[in-house]
Each structure stands twice: as structure tokens, then as C-alpha cells.
Length: 303
Length: 254
Image (cartoon, rainbow over all chains, first blue to last red; front, side, top):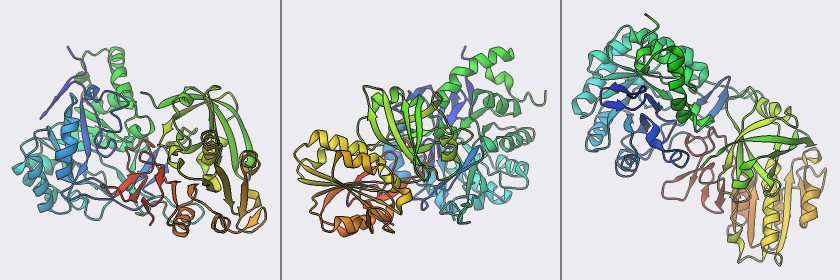
């Protein structure tokens, strides 16, 4: 048996390791470095109806054990992605999860309808949580009612399971999760970046051209883990955990908190080989913990 | 293919105010294909790697030289590293300078500004080896005498003009002032965006290549942090992967 195999709606995966959206492009930069077929899935960069150039530079800043980014959803637009990126990525034996972002409800729906015409989409990750653009989804990600309405609208036009990626920048993450679950979400991705900023020591001005950005990296893992733990105990749809994962032990923690799969984000920038390294290392950790399947670790936090 | 290497720090010494020269040894050197490529250094207690251009490299000795300026806590921490310590490096990254593109030119000038100077050193050696008959010169620009480094090393290779804004060493003024009286038909340049823009504005007819500096996270094209606008069909390019060297005239400066 495959000890790392996991089963989620639309995502029968050989292992639970995926790159988080925005941290892997469409995979082209990593394809020369290793065989992308080793990955359980690939969550591609956010897709919007029209191409977006993104924000002015500087777009990144370092933080203690993490980084801030304000890329601004740069992407070539859904049509180019369907035509050029997804067929290319489909040559690899891995699941494709398309992250979907928009500026308005109609915008999201129109993009989801286009995606429904592609045969290379295994699941949609609905991004209602990008903090870096004025109209990038965050306005849908902080009000449970609005988030639920958008989820239902996307479910109505999507032919594949829909995972809703929630923002941690809310007071009550459980209320958000319950709202999108009630609206028909097939799963939940937790978490997107935390909103933060840094100032240049000498000038006192923001380092990022966009002033604020999304905080990611190991520094946010305790927040992500707490939210996975809280949400996993209140809903019964699968959670894809993400936020600061950089080694196999982190993956074990996320499963223990209740995640059914995980995504590795910023760590890919520091070590482009981090995901195959984690996949190689996991069986040894399972042996050490005395379990056969990675699924046996799920929810250990409550047991 | 690997782009991740562990390199041994061979030596480190201060060259000028906040400017250090470091020699690293390891198999990454065997993968370098052109002067102007760069590496991403892991710095103790810092999350993001630091992109530093390769100044010079010796594939027989398996060593490369970097010259970097201490700007913040990351580069300061790197400057503390001593001989014998191992450093995690990604590289070689980027495309580097195209030496063959200058084949038709007779008078080639290398124009460096501040920490843009180092990658031109390896380029100068490559150009001199490729084109022993051509007239190749260098113009190096700095703010003041305290900032000047590597001018004697350049002068050993080729005729070199040093410019300082305040005139405290070499000639007073910008690199443009040095270039204006010269007959030039190919320019290689690396330095701050303002300097590159000024060169392209002053010499719109001259062919050449510019190497850009930009904040980046990954260094290999994935994070989309270091984009610049260009005339290509995408409208943008990634400084780390599509550059850092671009043809003069192709970058849209903002």
C-alpha cells in the first residue's frame, strides 16, 4: 500500500504534498529541478478573468522567520492559463488545483465558467483572501454571509470540487468555515497570509511599494495550526492545511491538527527542493511514530 | 539538474566602506555559463537568501569571487562569516552577459555604478579573451572616495576611468559625463536603475546590455517579486530568470 496516499474530493493523491498557490507559478520554474509527478498535486498561481501585471516593486520584504509579499495576483488571465499552462502541467502525473480570484461576484463566476471548459482542472481553490490588491477577494473573505453566497455561486457553475481558501485576518475563523461549508464547499484551505508591514529603518517609509503585504513563512505556522485545529473540530469537510510548512515534521503537526492534505508555500523560495525532500522524509517519520498511513495521524490533537 | 550547493568560504576581506570581497569554493562554479550570473546566499538567522552577482570565477580552481555591500542586517551577518564555514547557495542564476553580441562593435565600454561594478569584472576578462583586437574600456562610478573599490584591478585589465559624484577621487561627475566625449558603439552596464535609464537616454542609438538590480525572494522565477516592464510579448520580465541582463532599449524604466 501507499502509506502517503490521501483521498479528498476530486483529489485522489499519491501523497498529501502540494505547493501553495502563488509559490510555484504554474510549475515551469521547478520542472527543470525535479519531476513534478512526485507531487500529490499542484495549486497553481491565482487565475483571474483578465491578465494582471500586479503591483509595483519592491514586492517582497524579509521578516523574522518569514517574508511579506505584495505581488498583486500577477497572472496571464484565465484564457491563457487554460490554453498554455494547464495542458503543459497536465503532462505530469499530479492533480491540478486552480486558484481562482476575482474583483466582483460576476468576475469570479465568469472565470469559473471558463475553467469548467478545461479538462485539466481537478479542483478549484476559491481565493477570497488575497490581501494585496484593492479588488482581489478579501472583501469576500471577511463576511460569512458574503463568503457563503460566493461559494454557492461558484459551486453552481463548477464541474469540479471547490475548496475555499480562507483568510486568517478575521475575528472568527470558525464562523467563516461554517458559512462556506453550509454553502456547499467541498473543502477548505487554511490559511492565506496575515496582513503585515515593514518600514525601512533609515527612511521610516514602507519597504513594500504597496505599503502592506501578506506575511508568510514559518513565523505564521502557529496561527495556521491553531485555525486548522479550531475549524477541524467544527465542520466535517476536509481541510488542506498551509502556512509556514517547511519540513516533514510540520506536515505531521498539520495532520495532527486535523488537516487531510497540506500545501507548502514560501519554503519553496528558500529551498526549491523542499517538497520532494519532505515526501522522501515522511515514511521515516511515520515509522518513528508507529503508524502505517499518514491518515492515521489525522486529528491526533483530540484523541 | 541541481541549483542548490554547499560552498566553502575560502576568504573574506573588506575592500572599502561597507564593501567586502568573498571567495567561495564548490561545484556550483562548474555550472556558470556567463559573466553576470548571480547566486542566492543563505545568511545566518535570516529567512530570505541574498542575491549577489558573481564578480569573477575560476572553473579550474572551483572558486568564485563575490563583492557585496553591507546594506542591512543580512549582509552584515554574512560579513561575519569566516574562512572554512559552509554556505548554502542557489546558483548559478540568471542569464548573464552575452559576449558574442558585441562581435560587430569596435569600441566597447563597460559602465558600472556602485555595487553594479563587480559583475563587469568577469565580463571584462571574458571580452578581452574573446576580442583581443577591440578597444575595450571601463567607466566606474561611485558617490565618493570612501565608496571606491576594485578600480586598480580593473585598471590592470583595461583603460579605466573612475568617477565620483563629489570629485573626491578620480574625475568629478556621473558616468554620463565620462561617456559623453567617448566614441562608443557597444555598452555593457550594471548599476542603479537611475544610472541605467540615464545611459539609455543619453545614448539611444548605441547597442548594449544592462544588468538590473531588484529585490527578490526566490531568484529562479517562481515568486514574481522582481518583475520589470519590458517590450516582450508578456509586457514584463523577471529580473532573476529572464535577466538580470537585458538588451538596451528593451526595459521600460518606471
